[in-house]
Image 1 (cartoon, rainbow, N blue to C red):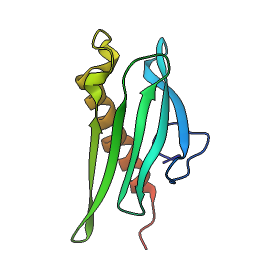
Image 2 (cartoon, helix red, strand yellow; image 1 turned 120 degrees about the vertical axis):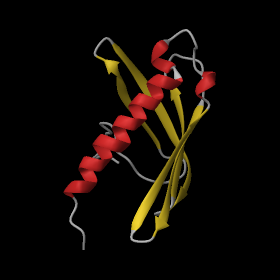
Image 3 (cartoon, helix red, strand yellow; image 1 turned 180 degrees about the vertical axis):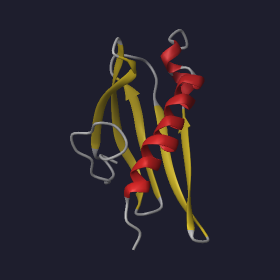
Image 4 (cartoon, rainbow, N blue to C red; image 1 turned 120 degrees about the horizontal axis):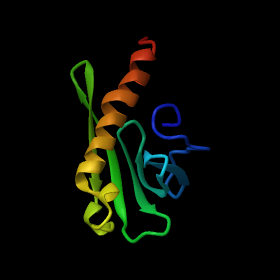
Length: 118
């Protein structure tokens, strides 16, 4: 995840591991994301709690992988968005959808395209 997700100082896929990153839609709107891994099934599932420093709200992000023939399907779920401040457009469902779409369809895709298949 350090290679395609956000600028993470360290990432260890273990229950209880905490990580954070600073990100936002532009230079003027950056938020400290505080995350804690709550579930790991190697090569199948990763889930972590996600909150913002200084803001109300608590959410859960889950990545799940499923074999589909010679391919792998990724299912991403981000629950609890309604718990974030509704008066901040950066916390809207549309904003999250835009961010996740870029992460999965651009950043992760570019990373995977560079990998050598053995």
